[in-house]
Length: 491
Image (tube, rainbow, N blue to C red; front, side):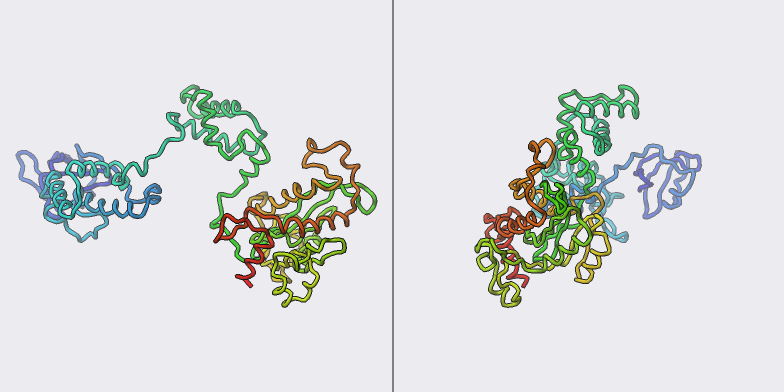
Protein backbone atom coordinates (compact mmCIF):
# COMPACT_ATOMS: atom_id res chain seq x y z
CA UNK A 1 0.00 0.00 0.00
CA UNK A 2 1.16 3.56 -0.65
CA UNK A 3 0.19 6.76 1.12
CA UNK A 4 1.69 9.91 -0.47
CA UNK A 5 5.41 9.14 -0.57
CA UNK A 6 5.30 6.40 2.14
CA UNK A 7 5.20 2.67 1.46
CA UNK A 8 3.14 0.61 3.97
CA UNK A 9 4.14 -3.04 4.02
CA UNK A 10 3.06 -6.13 5.88
CA UNK A 11 4.48 -6.08 9.41
CA UNK A 12 4.57 -2.28 9.73
CA UNK A 13 3.47 -0.74 13.04
CA UNK A 14 0.47 1.56 12.57
CA UNK A 15 -1.13 4.09 14.94
CA UNK A 16 -4.92 4.14 14.48
CA UNK A 17 -7.35 5.91 16.88
CA UNK A 18 -4.56 6.15 19.45
CA UNK A 19 -3.84 2.37 19.45
CA UNK A 20 -0.70 0.83 18.01
CA UNK A 21 -1.56 -1.97 15.58
CA UNK A 22 0.51 -4.17 13.32
CA UNK A 23 -0.46 -4.67 9.67
CA UNK A 24 -0.69 -8.46 9.37
CA UNK A 25 -2.69 -8.98 6.22
CA UNK A 26 -4.37 -7.57 3.11
CA UNK A 27 -7.60 -8.88 1.62
CA UNK A 28 -8.30 -6.96 -1.56
CA UNK A 29 -8.92 -3.36 -0.42
CA UNK A 30 -9.19 -4.35 3.25
CA UNK A 31 -6.29 -4.09 5.72
CA UNK A 32 -6.09 -6.55 8.66
CA UNK A 33 -4.81 -4.88 11.85
CA UNK A 34 -3.89 -6.82 14.99
CA UNK A 35 -2.86 -5.90 18.53
CA UNK A 36 -1.78 -8.15 21.38
CA UNK A 37 -4.70 -9.36 23.51
CA UNK A 38 -7.35 -8.10 21.06
CA UNK A 39 -9.10 -9.75 18.10
CA UNK A 40 -7.93 -8.46 14.67
CA UNK A 41 -9.93 -5.72 12.97
CA UNK A 42 -10.60 -5.19 9.27
CA UNK A 43 -10.51 -1.63 7.88
CA UNK A 44 -10.98 -0.36 4.34
CA UNK A 45 -7.65 0.88 3.06
CA UNK A 46 -9.20 4.11 1.78
CA UNK A 47 -10.83 4.83 5.12
CA UNK A 48 -7.59 3.99 6.93
CA UNK A 49 -5.53 6.46 4.89
CA UNK A 50 -8.21 9.17 5.16
CA UNK A 51 -8.46 8.95 8.96
CA UNK A 52 -6.75 11.87 10.77
CA UNK A 53 -5.41 9.57 13.50
CA UNK A 54 -3.67 7.24 11.02
CA UNK A 55 0.11 7.22 11.23
CA UNK A 56 2.78 4.80 10.08
CA UNK A 57 5.39 4.37 12.80
CA UNK A 58 8.13 2.49 10.91
CA UNK A 59 7.44 3.09 7.20
CA UNK A 60 10.20 3.68 4.71
CA UNK A 61 10.25 6.52 2.20
CA UNK A 62 9.66 5.57 -1.40
CA UNK A 63 12.14 7.01 -3.85
CA UNK A 64 10.50 8.93 -6.63
CA UNK A 65 11.04 7.34 -10.03
CA UNK A 66 11.65 9.17 -13.24
CA UNK A 67 9.76 7.22 -15.88
CA UNK A 68 11.18 8.11 -19.27
CA UNK A 69 10.90 11.89 -18.98
CA UNK A 70 14.60 12.66 -18.75
CA UNK A 71 16.12 14.73 -21.55
CA UNK A 72 19.15 12.50 -21.33
CA UNK A 73 16.97 9.46 -21.97
CA UNK A 74 15.18 11.15 -24.87
CA UNK A 75 18.53 11.84 -26.54
CA UNK A 76 19.54 8.14 -26.58
CA UNK A 77 19.30 5.98 -29.72
CA UNK A 78 15.87 4.49 -30.41
CA UNK A 79 16.99 0.88 -29.98
CA UNK A 80 18.44 1.69 -26.54
CA UNK A 81 15.19 3.37 -25.44
CA UNK A 82 13.06 0.46 -26.67
CA UNK A 83 15.24 -2.03 -24.79
CA UNK A 84 15.09 0.05 -21.59
CA UNK A 85 11.29 0.39 -21.72
CA UNK A 86 10.94 -3.36 -22.30
CA UNK A 87 13.12 -4.10 -19.25
CA UNK A 88 11.17 -1.50 -17.25
CA UNK A 89 8.02 -3.59 -17.67
CA UNK A 90 9.74 -6.61 -16.14
CA UNK A 91 11.43 -4.70 -13.31
CA UNK A 92 8.24 -2.92 -12.22
CA UNK A 93 6.38 -6.23 -12.25
CA UNK A 94 8.92 -7.56 -9.76
CA UNK A 95 8.76 -4.45 -7.57
CA UNK A 96 5.04 -3.66 -7.71
CA UNK A 97 3.35 -6.83 -8.89
CA UNK A 98 2.17 -5.33 -12.17
CA UNK A 99 4.10 -3.70 -15.02
CA UNK A 100 4.24 0.10 -15.17
CA UNK A 101 1.49 1.64 -17.24
CA UNK A 102 -0.93 -1.25 -16.67
CA UNK A 103 -4.63 -0.48 -16.42
CA UNK A 104 -6.12 -0.27 -12.88
CA UNK A 105 -8.18 -3.41 -13.43
CA UNK A 106 -5.10 -5.53 -14.21
CA UNK A 107 -4.31 -7.94 -11.35
CA UNK A 108 -0.85 -9.34 -10.58
CA UNK A 109 0.08 -12.72 -11.95
CA UNK A 110 0.29 -15.35 -9.18
CA UNK A 111 4.09 -15.48 -9.31
CA UNK A 112 4.35 -11.70 -8.74
CA UNK A 113 1.52 -11.02 -6.27
CA UNK A 114 3.15 -8.92 -3.55
CA UNK A 115 0.57 -10.21 -1.04
CA UNK A 116 1.58 -13.81 -1.58
CA UNK A 117 5.21 -13.75 -2.75
CA UNK A 118 8.27 -12.18 -1.19
CA UNK A 119 10.65 -9.99 -3.20
CA UNK A 120 13.11 -12.88 -3.40
CA UNK A 121 10.45 -15.20 -4.81
CA UNK A 122 9.38 -12.60 -7.36
CA UNK A 123 12.99 -12.08 -8.45
CA UNK A 124 13.51 -15.83 -8.91
CA UNK A 125 10.31 -16.08 -10.95
CA UNK A 126 11.32 -13.16 -13.18
CA UNK A 127 14.83 -14.56 -13.64
CA UNK A 128 13.41 -17.87 -14.85
CA UNK A 129 10.97 -16.07 -17.16
CA UNK A 130 13.70 -13.96 -18.76
CA UNK A 131 15.86 -17.02 -19.33
CA UNK A 132 12.96 -18.66 -21.16
CA UNK A 133 12.68 -15.52 -23.34
CA UNK A 134 16.34 -15.91 -24.32
CA UNK A 135 17.61 -13.03 -22.17
CA UNK A 136 21.06 -13.92 -20.82
CA UNK A 137 20.69 -12.24 -17.44
CA UNK A 138 21.99 -13.43 -14.09
CA UNK A 139 19.95 -13.14 -10.92
CA UNK A 140 22.46 -10.75 -9.35
CA UNK A 141 22.28 -8.46 -12.39
CA UNK A 142 18.48 -8.50 -12.24
CA UNK A 143 18.70 -7.42 -8.61
CA UNK A 144 21.16 -4.66 -9.50
CA UNK A 145 18.79 -3.41 -12.20
CA UNK A 146 15.99 -3.28 -9.66
CA UNK A 147 18.06 -1.19 -7.26
CA UNK A 148 19.25 1.08 -10.09
CA UNK A 149 15.65 1.62 -11.20
CA UNK A 150 14.69 2.71 -7.70
CA UNK A 151 17.60 5.16 -7.64
CA UNK A 152 17.61 6.57 -11.19
CA UNK A 153 14.36 5.61 -12.82
CA UNK A 154 14.54 4.30 -16.36
CA UNK A 155 18.06 5.67 -16.81
CA UNK A 156 19.21 3.01 -14.35
CA UNK A 157 18.30 0.35 -16.96
CA UNK A 158 20.55 1.90 -19.63
CA UNK A 159 24.20 1.09 -20.20
CA UNK A 160 25.84 3.77 -18.06
CA UNK A 161 28.63 4.26 -20.58
CA UNK A 162 26.06 5.88 -22.90
CA UNK A 163 25.02 8.53 -20.37
CA UNK A 164 28.20 9.12 -18.43
CA UNK A 165 28.96 12.83 -18.39
CA UNK A 166 32.20 14.55 -17.52
CA UNK A 167 31.54 17.46 -15.14
CA UNK A 168 32.56 20.77 -16.67
CA UNK A 169 33.89 22.12 -13.38
CA UNK A 170 35.39 19.07 -11.68
CA UNK A 171 35.09 19.46 -7.90
CA UNK A 172 34.17 23.16 -7.94
CA UNK A 173 31.19 24.08 -5.77
CA UNK A 174 28.01 24.42 -7.83
CA UNK A 175 27.29 27.74 -6.11
CA UNK A 176 30.48 29.14 -7.63
CA UNK A 177 29.31 28.12 -11.11
CA UNK A 178 25.88 29.70 -10.58
CA UNK A 179 27.47 32.92 -9.35
CA UNK A 180 29.89 33.02 -12.29
CA UNK A 181 27.06 32.60 -14.82
CA UNK A 182 25.13 35.40 -13.10
CA UNK A 183 28.17 37.70 -13.21
CA UNK A 184 28.72 36.93 -16.91
CA UNK A 185 25.14 37.94 -17.66
CA UNK A 186 25.49 41.15 -15.63
CA UNK A 187 28.69 42.08 -17.49
CA UNK A 188 27.10 41.70 -20.93
CA UNK A 189 26.45 45.46 -21.21
CA UNK A 190 29.42 46.63 -19.13
CA UNK A 191 32.86 47.73 -20.30
CA UNK A 192 35.35 44.92 -20.81
CA UNK A 193 37.58 43.92 -17.92
CA UNK A 194 39.94 41.13 -16.94
CA UNK A 195 39.26 37.69 -15.49
CA UNK A 196 40.55 39.02 -12.18
CA UNK A 197 37.63 41.46 -12.05
CA UNK A 198 35.20 38.63 -12.73
CA UNK A 199 36.74 36.66 -9.87
CA UNK A 200 36.30 39.54 -7.43
CA UNK A 201 32.70 40.04 -8.54
CA UNK A 202 31.96 36.33 -8.01
CA UNK A 203 33.56 36.44 -4.55
CA UNK A 204 31.48 39.48 -3.60
CA UNK A 205 28.27 37.88 -4.85
CA UNK A 206 28.90 34.67 -2.89
CA UNK A 207 29.74 36.56 0.31
CA UNK A 208 26.58 38.64 -0.03
CA UNK A 209 24.32 35.65 -0.57
CA UNK A 210 25.86 32.99 1.70
CA UNK A 211 28.06 34.92 4.12
CA UNK A 212 31.73 35.85 4.19
CA UNK A 213 33.95 32.91 3.29
CA UNK A 214 31.16 30.30 3.51
CA UNK A 215 31.58 29.17 -0.10
CA UNK A 216 35.20 28.27 -0.95
CA UNK A 217 36.58 29.89 -4.09
CA UNK A 218 38.70 27.85 -6.51
CA UNK A 219 42.29 28.79 -7.17
CA UNK A 220 43.09 31.51 -9.68
CA UNK A 221 44.22 29.00 -12.33
CA UNK A 222 41.09 26.89 -11.85
CA UNK A 223 38.87 29.99 -12.08
CA UNK A 224 40.55 31.00 -15.35
CA UNK A 225 39.79 27.54 -16.75
CA UNK A 226 36.16 27.83 -15.63
CA UNK A 227 35.80 31.20 -17.35
CA UNK A 228 37.33 29.73 -20.49
CA UNK A 229 34.70 26.98 -20.52
CA UNK A 230 31.59 28.77 -19.30
CA UNK A 231 32.26 32.01 -21.18
CA UNK A 232 33.16 30.34 -24.47
CA UNK A 233 31.70 32.41 -27.31
CA UNK A 234 30.57 35.21 -24.95
CA UNK A 235 33.62 37.50 -25.36
CA UNK A 236 33.52 37.97 -21.57
CA UNK A 237 36.83 39.83 -21.51
CA UNK A 238 37.04 40.74 -25.19
CA UNK A 239 35.14 43.10 -27.47
CA UNK A 240 32.33 44.88 -25.60
CA UNK A 241 30.50 45.52 -28.86
CA UNK A 242 30.55 41.84 -29.80
CA UNK A 243 29.48 40.90 -26.28
CA UNK A 244 26.46 43.21 -26.48
CA UNK A 245 25.50 41.78 -29.85
CA UNK A 246 25.67 38.22 -28.52
CA UNK A 247 23.63 39.19 -25.46
CA UNK A 248 20.88 40.54 -27.72
CA UNK A 249 20.86 37.40 -29.82
CA UNK A 250 17.61 35.44 -29.42
CA UNK A 251 17.75 31.92 -28.05
CA UNK A 252 17.16 30.58 -31.55
CA UNK A 253 14.56 30.44 -34.30
CA UNK A 254 11.86 27.81 -34.35
CA UNK A 255 13.54 26.38 -37.42
CA UNK A 256 16.28 27.19 -39.88
CA UNK A 257 15.24 28.87 -43.14
CA UNK A 258 16.70 27.50 -46.34
CA UNK A 259 15.35 29.36 -49.38
CA UNK A 260 15.41 27.27 -52.53
CA UNK A 261 14.59 29.81 -55.21
CA UNK A 262 15.86 33.27 -56.14
CA UNK A 263 13.96 36.05 -54.39
CA UNK A 264 12.30 33.79 -51.82
CA UNK A 265 14.15 35.58 -49.00
CA UNK A 266 16.03 38.87 -49.37
CA UNK A 267 17.75 40.94 -46.68
CA UNK A 268 18.34 44.70 -46.82
CA UNK A 269 20.46 47.03 -44.69
CA UNK A 270 22.53 50.21 -44.73
CA UNK A 271 26.00 51.01 -43.40
CA UNK A 272 28.48 53.89 -43.63
CA UNK A 273 30.93 53.24 -46.47
CA UNK A 274 34.57 53.81 -45.52
CA UNK A 275 35.24 56.08 -48.51
CA UNK A 276 35.56 59.87 -48.66
CA UNK A 277 33.62 61.25 -51.64
CA UNK A 278 33.43 64.67 -53.24
CA UNK A 279 29.77 65.60 -52.91
CA UNK A 280 27.78 67.76 -55.33
CA UNK A 281 28.56 70.97 -53.41
CA UNK A 282 32.29 70.25 -53.52
CA UNK A 283 32.48 69.24 -49.85
CA UNK A 284 34.37 66.06 -48.98
CA UNK A 285 32.16 63.77 -46.93
CA UNK A 286 31.23 60.22 -46.01
CA UNK A 287 28.49 58.26 -47.74
CA UNK A 288 26.14 55.40 -46.88
CA UNK A 289 25.78 52.12 -48.73
CA UNK A 290 22.36 50.48 -48.92
CA UNK A 291 22.27 47.00 -50.43
CA UNK A 292 20.05 43.96 -50.89
CA UNK A 293 21.30 40.38 -50.91
CA UNK A 294 19.39 37.33 -52.13
CA UNK A 295 19.89 34.54 -49.56
CA UNK A 296 19.45 31.63 -51.96
CA UNK A 297 22.08 32.80 -54.46
CA UNK A 298 24.05 35.40 -52.43
CA UNK A 299 23.56 37.76 -55.37
CA UNK A 300 23.56 41.54 -54.93
CA UNK A 301 20.52 42.50 -57.05
CA UNK A 302 20.82 46.18 -56.07
CA UNK A 303 23.11 48.53 -54.14
CA UNK A 304 23.06 52.32 -53.99
CA UNK A 305 25.40 54.91 -52.45
CA UNK A 306 23.90 58.06 -50.99
CA UNK A 307 25.01 60.75 -48.52
CA UNK A 308 22.27 59.47 -46.19
CA UNK A 309 19.75 56.73 -46.81
CA UNK A 310 16.18 57.96 -47.16
CA UNK A 311 12.90 56.17 -47.76
CA UNK A 312 13.02 57.00 -51.46
CA UNK A 313 16.47 55.42 -51.74
CA UNK A 314 15.21 52.19 -50.17
CA UNK A 315 12.27 52.15 -52.58
CA UNK A 316 14.71 52.80 -55.46
CA UNK A 317 16.46 49.55 -54.58
CA UNK A 318 13.26 47.63 -55.33
CA UNK A 319 13.14 49.12 -58.81
CA UNK A 320 16.84 48.46 -59.47
CA UNK A 321 16.71 44.79 -58.43
CA UNK A 322 13.81 44.14 -60.85
CA UNK A 323 15.38 46.01 -63.75
CA UNK A 324 18.16 44.53 -65.91
CA UNK A 325 21.55 46.20 -65.47
CA UNK A 326 22.65 47.42 -68.89
CA UNK A 327 26.22 46.88 -70.02
CA UNK A 328 27.62 50.41 -69.93
CA UNK A 329 30.17 52.02 -72.25
CA UNK A 330 33.69 51.26 -71.09
CA UNK A 331 32.78 47.95 -69.47
CA UNK A 332 34.48 44.84 -70.82
CA UNK A 333 32.58 42.50 -73.12
CA UNK A 334 33.09 39.76 -70.54
CA UNK A 335 30.76 41.72 -68.22
CA UNK A 336 27.77 41.08 -70.50
CA UNK A 337 25.14 38.53 -69.60
CA UNK A 338 25.70 36.72 -72.88
CA UNK A 339 29.26 35.88 -71.81
CA UNK A 340 28.35 34.80 -68.26
CA UNK A 341 27.22 31.63 -66.54
CA UNK A 342 23.63 32.91 -66.50
CA UNK A 343 21.14 31.15 -68.87
CA UNK A 344 21.07 34.16 -71.17
CA UNK A 345 19.21 32.68 -74.14
CA UNK A 346 16.39 31.18 -72.06
CA UNK A 347 15.96 34.40 -70.13
CA UNK A 348 16.15 36.62 -73.20
CA UNK A 349 13.38 34.62 -74.88
CA UNK A 350 11.09 35.70 -72.06
CA UNK A 351 12.29 39.26 -71.50
CA UNK A 352 13.69 41.23 -74.44
CA UNK A 353 15.06 43.85 -72.04
CA UNK A 354 17.95 41.46 -71.34
CA UNK A 355 19.47 42.16 -74.76
CA UNK A 356 22.69 44.00 -73.97
CA UNK A 357 22.30 43.42 -70.23
CA UNK A 358 25.21 43.00 -67.86
CA UNK A 359 25.93 39.73 -66.05
CA UNK A 360 23.72 40.33 -63.03
CA UNK A 361 20.44 38.45 -62.50
CA UNK A 362 17.05 40.11 -62.21
CA UNK A 363 15.50 39.03 -58.91
CA UNK A 364 11.93 39.71 -57.76
CA UNK A 365 11.83 39.60 -53.93
CA UNK A 366 9.05 37.68 -52.21
CA UNK A 367 10.05 38.46 -48.60
CA UNK A 368 12.39 41.20 -47.42
CA UNK A 369 13.94 41.17 -43.95
CA UNK A 370 14.93 44.60 -42.64
CA UNK A 371 15.77 46.29 -39.35
CA UNK A 372 13.95 49.21 -37.71
CA UNK A 373 15.77 51.94 -39.63
CA UNK A 374 13.66 54.97 -40.50
CA UNK A 375 13.97 54.32 -44.22
CA UNK A 376 12.53 50.80 -43.88
CA UNK A 377 9.65 51.53 -41.52
CA UNK A 378 8.54 54.55 -43.55
CA UNK A 379 5.23 54.56 -45.39
CA UNK A 380 7.08 55.11 -48.68
CA UNK A 381 9.00 51.87 -48.45
CA UNK A 382 6.08 49.88 -47.03
CA UNK A 383 3.75 51.12 -49.77
CA UNK A 384 6.33 50.25 -52.43
CA UNK A 385 6.59 46.68 -51.06
CA UNK A 386 2.82 46.40 -50.79
CA UNK A 387 2.26 47.52 -54.37
CA UNK A 388 4.72 44.88 -55.60
CA UNK A 389 3.28 42.09 -53.46
CA UNK A 390 6.41 41.85 -51.30
CA UNK A 391 6.13 40.68 -47.71
CA UNK A 392 8.11 42.90 -45.31
CA UNK A 393 9.49 41.16 -42.24
CA UNK A 394 11.15 43.21 -39.49
CA UNK A 395 14.00 41.86 -37.40
CA UNK A 396 14.03 42.05 -33.62
CA UNK A 397 15.25 45.44 -32.33
CA UNK A 398 19.04 45.64 -31.97
CA UNK A 399 19.42 42.06 -33.19
CA UNK A 400 21.70 41.96 -36.24
CA UNK A 401 21.80 38.16 -35.98
CA UNK A 402 18.28 38.13 -37.47
CA UNK A 403 19.82 39.20 -40.81
CA UNK A 404 23.40 37.92 -40.65
CA UNK A 405 23.91 37.47 -44.40
CA UNK A 406 23.49 41.14 -45.29
CA UNK A 407 25.57 42.16 -42.24
CA UNK A 408 28.47 40.00 -43.43
CA UNK A 409 27.97 41.03 -47.06
CA UNK A 410 28.30 44.72 -46.19
CA UNK A 411 31.55 43.94 -44.37
CA UNK A 412 32.80 42.04 -47.42
CA UNK A 413 32.10 45.04 -49.66
CA UNK A 414 34.26 47.12 -47.34
CA UNK A 415 37.22 44.76 -47.74
CA UNK A 416 36.77 43.58 -51.32
CA UNK A 417 35.79 46.89 -52.91
CA UNK A 418 36.21 49.95 -50.70
CA UNK A 419 39.87 49.43 -49.78
CA UNK A 420 40.92 49.72 -53.44
CA UNK A 421 39.13 53.04 -54.00
CA UNK A 422 41.02 56.31 -53.75
CA UNK A 423 39.84 58.08 -50.63
CA UNK A 424 39.53 54.90 -48.56
CA UNK A 425 39.36 55.85 -44.85
CA UNK A 426 39.70 52.46 -43.18
CA UNK A 427 37.22 50.84 -40.82
CA UNK A 428 38.41 52.86 -37.79
CA UNK A 429 40.64 55.79 -36.89
CA UNK A 430 43.56 53.53 -36.03
CA UNK A 431 43.36 52.01 -39.52
CA UNK A 432 43.14 55.36 -41.29
CA UNK A 433 46.03 56.72 -43.30
CA UNK A 434 47.42 60.23 -42.96
CA UNK A 435 45.25 62.87 -44.66
CA UNK A 436 43.08 60.13 -46.21
CA UNK A 437 40.13 62.53 -46.65
CA UNK A 438 42.19 64.84 -48.83
CA UNK A 439 42.79 62.06 -51.35
CA UNK A 440 39.13 61.81 -52.31
CA UNK A 441 38.76 62.39 -56.05
CA UNK A 442 35.59 60.54 -57.04
CA UNK A 443 32.15 62.05 -57.14
CA UNK A 444 29.04 60.28 -55.88
CA UNK A 445 28.03 59.22 -59.40
CA UNK A 446 31.52 57.90 -60.17
CA UNK A 447 31.60 55.83 -56.97
CA UNK A 448 28.18 54.41 -57.82
CA UNK A 449 29.39 53.47 -61.31
CA UNK A 450 32.50 51.78 -59.90
CA UNK A 451 30.38 49.81 -57.41
CA UNK A 452 27.95 48.67 -60.12
CA UNK A 453 30.83 47.46 -62.30
CA UNK A 454 32.49 45.67 -59.37
CA UNK A 455 29.26 43.85 -58.49
CA UNK A 456 28.88 42.61 -62.08
CA UNK A 457 32.49 41.66 -62.72
CA UNK A 458 33.66 40.85 -59.20
CA UNK A 459 31.01 39.81 -56.72
CA UNK A 460 28.70 37.89 -59.04
CA UNK A 461 31.61 35.82 -60.40
CA UNK A 462 33.45 35.27 -57.11
CA UNK A 463 33.06 31.77 -55.58
CA UNK A 464 31.11 31.98 -52.32
CA UNK A 465 31.73 29.39 -49.62
CA UNK A 466 28.03 29.37 -48.72
CA UNK A 467 27.08 28.19 -52.22
CA UNK A 468 27.75 24.55 -52.99
CA UNK A 469 26.38 21.93 -55.32
CA UNK A 470 24.57 19.26 -53.22
CA UNK A 471 25.79 16.54 -55.58
CA UNK A 472 29.39 17.79 -55.57
CA UNK A 473 29.75 19.54 -52.19
CA UNK A 474 33.47 20.06 -52.67
CA UNK A 475 32.71 22.49 -55.51
CA UNK A 476 32.14 26.13 -54.53
CA UNK A 477 29.75 28.06 -56.81
CA UNK A 478 29.56 31.74 -57.73
CA UNK A 479 26.29 33.70 -57.27
CA UNK A 480 25.67 33.60 -61.02
CA UNK A 481 26.24 29.83 -61.16
CA UNK A 482 23.93 29.28 -58.20
CA UNK A 483 21.27 31.45 -59.82
CA UNK A 484 21.48 29.44 -63.03
CA UNK A 485 21.19 26.15 -61.12
CA UNK A 486 18.17 27.27 -59.08
CA UNK A 487 16.49 28.78 -62.12
CA UNK A 488 16.29 25.31 -63.68
CA UNK A 489 14.40 24.11 -60.60
CA UNK A 490 12.28 27.13 -59.70
CA UNK A 491 11.60 28.46 -63.21
